[in-house]
Image (cartoon, rainbow, N blue to C red; front, side, top):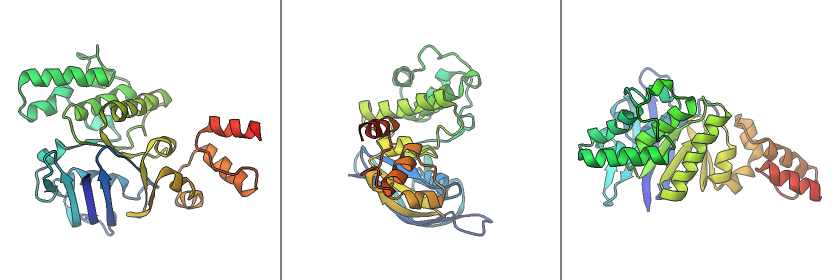
Amino acid sequence: MNVISVEDLSFKYRRASDYALRDVSFKVKKGEFLGVIGPSGSGKSTLCLTLNGIIPNSIKGEFKGRVVVRDTNGEELDTRETPVSRISSLVGLVLQNPDSQLFNMTVEEEVAFGLENLGLDPNEIWRRVRWALEVSGLRGLENEFPPNLSGGQKQRLAIAAAFAMRPQVLVLDEPTSQLDPLGKDEVLGLLSLLRREYGITIVLVEHHTDYILRHADRVLVMDAGRVVFEGTPAEVVEEVELLKKLGVKIPVSLEVSHELRKRGKLKRLFINPEELLSELKSS
């Protein structure tokens, strides 16, 4: 079942001279992990903002096409006709800069904020808060002031606040772009846990492609506001020349194995460096 359908979507910001998105169409299946990659300025962040209705309801511009979100009862909700508050309970959004999303005085209050706006019973709110903090590895930090957290902790808090609302889909726009290696591992580990333990549908925009190529079910490659290629990670890695031409950062192991395959030294491509080294040692 499709939980999001994007049909012939184009969008141009007010006072912009060109479209940020052009004739974009794709579907997101329930439980799927969809990766989105592409160079800076390709429209990835704009696309994220359309998936829960911030565009066109809060950010105005020229909007063509449709974005439809299916709720748990099977009802199709057109984002142009549905309040962001309704869509955001189904599609959670996490931005690349957690400081732009965190504004409460404590970690606990941050996670509770969205739940309070849903009008949930207080007992249910605090049950979900404790659960979300446990899942995200933030238990014990309930009374911390969010700006005092590390970068990885801040981003995990933003994810916890979104996940506590029990969305069907979690959309993340380059959540590791401002993190050190430890913070990046913390956030990506949490996403793997949410997928494995809770089967949540994930749409992940990520500048570093190694995680997406290892874990995603399907990948969209974007450039100049368009989807220029769509396929499984196995299909995407065969498009190394296209990715390099677009300026997409690819894993070193993929680039090395691509060059060795061209020279007849390898028969297949590798994303995992350990697997590449093992293959080179055995050959």
